[in-house]
Every structure is written in structure tokens, then in C-alpha cells.
Length: 353
Image (cartoon, rainbow, N blue to C red; front, side, top):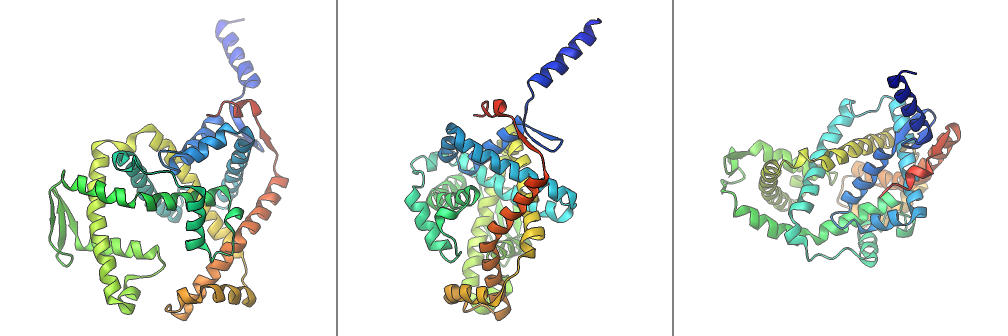
């Protein structure tokens, strides 16, 4: 036998005997490297400590639970692709670009603020539960019933609250390194960071983006409370100056070119497609009846009393749909799992660290 043919045969045999895929969904093989990226992404989401994820990896039974989430991610991605949802979709890509910018900056801050955050202790279970009850107590869901992803998001919110003071100290450190001129929020150029101009239109766009996260427009806030709008505008002004300094620091360190950041962005793309598909194809189909609306209204009426009636209805409907989403999603996944052939490679699972 010719030597080249012999080695090709050996490679095929080795590949057959020692596959590097970790799961198979129908005929699609998903390799161990993709799952490792998923694990690493989860670690980064928890900040530098990543203690919660490390505990999961150390416990193989828990790691299997984590693998189940990875499988569900790919089941939904498969369905999303079937319906034309991908990162190449214009609307999906717009969401991704915004999340990418925010996510990279948050990750960079966790790394670059190490000096300021070194004394911060990891959120305790009690702190996380207390935060959840304070801010999400109206969600009709107990903390114990949250999924791993949901608990991770609450964890991050508590952690970000803890590092808020450190962020102010870090900002002062950066301000010593850059020449900053504040011209005023009503000028054409509102500020200058070294040679980078920040314009009034950039500030207005930033205010709009920030308020949209709260579900309101600048016009609505201004009409209801000019003083509150002024406060939001001042906060957005300082935040934009801060972000400009951070962007400069990221460029100096070539942060976005680092391999672990690029790997994480691959996973972020998948997460954005998943969330967009769930929003458009699953959550949008959830119905809300008058009894459910009334139950939620009684719980949150104090919080939404100043909103216009149509906006009150939107908030109430959103609360009900969010409470019902998990059950609907699990039914969807169960049906899809029945239709698919799913295999796990236990040998590859042992290699995860």
C-alpha cells in the first residue's frame, strides 16, 4: 500500500475510533471546542472569579446539566436557521452589534479594573436572593425556580452593583491620563477627550439608547418630569465621556483582538440568535387573558400608575408572558427532542475543564 494512502486510512480510523464531537443532533456534529467556548463564555459572564461555573465543572453531574443547556441552545439554533434567523439577518445583526459593544466593554472593565475591584467579595447567595426579591419580586416567579441562565443574570446584576463604587474610582484614574474638556451639554461639541470630539447628536442618541432600556423615550420623560430628564441627561453625558476613555484604553491594549474575546463573541452571536428567535417565534405566540392581566396589575399598579394606559397594558402583558415563557419553551424543546436523534460523547465530556 502507498504510504500516503496508509496514513489517510490511519487518520480516518483514528477519527472514527476517537471522535472529538461532544454532541450529535441528527447528523450535525458539534465539537468539544464549541462546548469549551460555551463554558468559557459562562465563566466570563460571571466576571474574574467565575466560582459558580468552576463548581459546576468540578461536579460531573452538574456538568451534564450544563451540557443539556448547550444541547437546547443548538436545538433552538437549528430551528432558528430553518426559519431564516441567523446573525446575517439585518435585525438580528443590529441587536448583536449593540450587545457586542456593551458586552466587550463590560468584559474589558472587569479585567482592567482589577486594581479597583480586588477587594470586592463575590455576591453571596443571600445577597443574590435579596436583590432578586427587591427588583424582581413582581415576576410571579420564586428565586428557587429560576433557570441557570436566569440566576446567572441576577448574579451579574448584583456584581455590577458591587463594582459601581470601584467604577467611579477607576474613572478618576482614567481622567488623570486623558485631557478632558467639558463644553456643556447644549453645545455642538459637548466634550473633548484628548483629540476625540463628543457631539451633541452623539449625546442625544446615547440618552435615547439609555432610556429605551427602561421602555421610555426622552420625550415621555421630559413631558412627565423635566427635572428627571435633566438628571438622566447629566448621567448620560458623564457616561459618554467615560465610555470614550474606555474605548481608547481598549484600542491601546488591542483588547478585541484577543483570542478569548473572539471565542466569546462566537457564543454571543448564538445567544443573540437564540433570544431573538424566542422573542419572535415563541413568546409572541403566548396569549394573555383578563384574569392574568388583573392579577399582575394588582401587584405592580403602584409602579406603573404614572404611565399612559397603553403603556401600562404593554408592561402587564410583558410580565404575564415572561411568567409563562419557561413552561411554553420547555414544551417546545420537549417536542423537538422527540423528533431528533441526540447523542452525547461521554469520553469528550471528561476532557472539559
